[in-house]
Amino acid sequence: MSALAYFLEDEGLPTVVLSLIRAHSEAIGNPRSLWVPFELGRPLGPPNNAVFQKDVMRVALELLEVPTGPVLLADYPHDDPTAADRDDWRPPFDFAETIPDPSNSVQFAAALEDEMRTLAPFHRAFVAANQRTMVGLSGMDIEGCRQFFVSYLADPAATNPIPSVPIAEAFRRVVDDLKAYYLEAMMSANPVIPSRPQLENLFWDRTALARACLAVRIRMFADNEKVTHFMGDRGLLPGPQRHRLGLYGTL
Figure 1 (cartoon, one colour):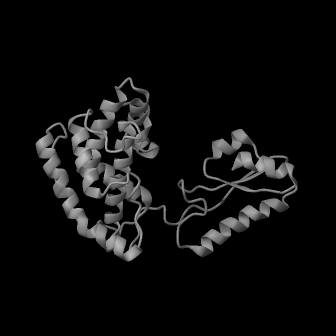
Figure 2 (cartoon, rainbow, N blue to C red):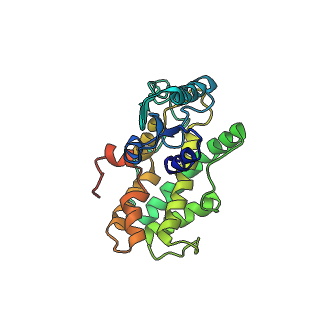
Figure 3 (cartoon, rainbow, N blue to C red):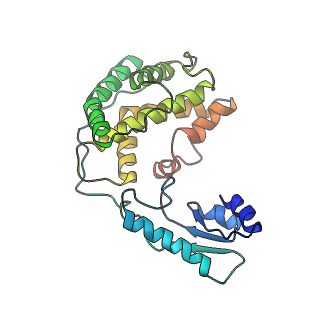
């Protein structure tokens, strides 16, 4: 959008860009940008909060009236009110106290199946209540995702279920679907909405699926094939979790 702003400005149309990554806006230097301290995918802040979102748009549009320039980068002054952890939120189910080592493929496959069986009714409740789901990137049903995940964990030469892309990319898509399944189930049947970091931290700290993802990440990181290495480096573990777990730039 920052690059597109230049072309629009050349045609005489003033622009304002909402910036989610401040460093990018600093480097590109388009005429007017409002940096917003929200997570990627939420340029207007928390969902279902029209008052807050209108304020973001108001502050952005007011930059059209500021006479300074030619480059103006302003900071939105308020944080996302839903970004703080909620002490009164608990997931609607308990995770297992112990998780088998992913290297024990038989025990781990059973533990993952039990974990996902526990989540199933909660995910159905989430979809029924919200009439939507983020599961679907891989094009496979959730059981197919689980089966391929277990197969790839045991053998990186497993059959690729999405032959149009490298198997490492297929695995990432399957992980994205499984992760969405977990996070949506974790938000089910609870009027309290947790923060995104609160959900992510619980997922990466307390689930068998996440434990296995970290194990596969090490294997991918050591692979010389570019796509596989990239998935191990950056594709499986989000940047904030790499920082939190002390794995940024390392295995």
